[in-house]
Image 1 (spheres, rainbow over the protein chains, first blue to last red):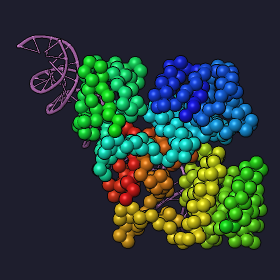
Image 2: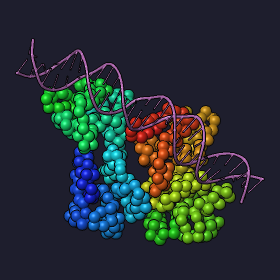
Image 3: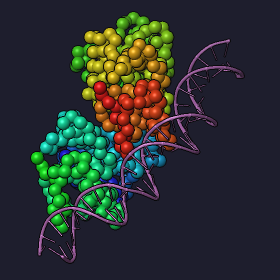
Image 4: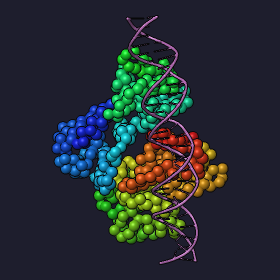
Length: 219
Length: 219
DNA sequence: TAAGTATTTTCAGCTTGCTGTCAGGATAGC
DNA sequence: GCTATCCTGACAGCAAGCTGAAAATACTTA
């Protein structure tokens, strides 16, 4: 899915950019309304993530202009907590959803996923892997009918593997996926979680590549 | 199906009118409570689409008057209002469903269709869930014959789960369902209501997904 | 309006179970 | 065998969630 991210905070913008890219979306990240207009003029997007307070104007105005011109691209608004009335204005102006900062990346993923599904017409995406069924939407994993309970971290790890099927992933890459930027991990946490995941999913799925990282078998 | 649409915004009214007419319903569109009363006095409707903020009064009052006079016509509330209690008042006053503006027309169609089916084929639609019977019309839950009394909030929460059976719902999503946009909840209200619902319905129905939200078992 | 009742919201203490770390053992490669 | 790397059981600390109860609010009835 093709996303336009309009967010002037470098820090937050980068995080969202990375996350969305990780999830397989094509992200164009711009930081001003001017740039956004240029991007929108030249490209067709499936979803716009819209910050409201921007250096060269207010996001609502962009949204209004967009809707006025007959553009019905899905829009999710990102607003600060103290701008409640903005949310209402945003929804009135034709936004599809909103998120209040600070938000969990997982929450953002869920909303974006919901929009993606709405557009793809696929209500409940699942991945089948060996005898496992992974419900990406509900964070549910089942094997032979039985449900496997995963903790948040275990799920995040599985997700990392599923996003790049069959690829070799270094511990650093996995850490980057599990821990939002800046987190310092000084122990063998990844090893521990790989171990826990294997125990729950079945050992043969995740293979160790000594000195390099891990790889999940695709079939 | 014969609909009464009470909506004072010309723009929105026209859109809904057209859409519903397209879908084969007979639509009477009025713009004030006065006109609505006149229409209701002379005609039998299957469904009322009710805006709340109206030039000559509040939609809730009409709904209350209607129910007080023993009229059980289905009502779907259309509200852009951000007042916390509107939704609750609406449901308490006997609304069947609600939609927060702006909404997708497809969403509206779906709700209207649901009401249509509810009234056409099935005079008393119920969902069976474990040993529970949930009567969607009357907002009643029974178990082994005994009736379980739910308060407005408790019902709203149950409803959120029933509308998306088996899906993982975050606390934020549940808040959005219980509290119209704009309400800020700063405590563990959702946890409290989950706790109360569990106590009334039976603990095993709602499962906690730590760090992510809750999920209601479907069977 | 005021009193009485019901519901909602908040708070605080408690429980649960996840997380990150470590240590000691296992394994692979040389 | 030796070493680097990886695996995994155990555990303390912590954060998320649960729940009883009080405070605040809404609703009802006289």
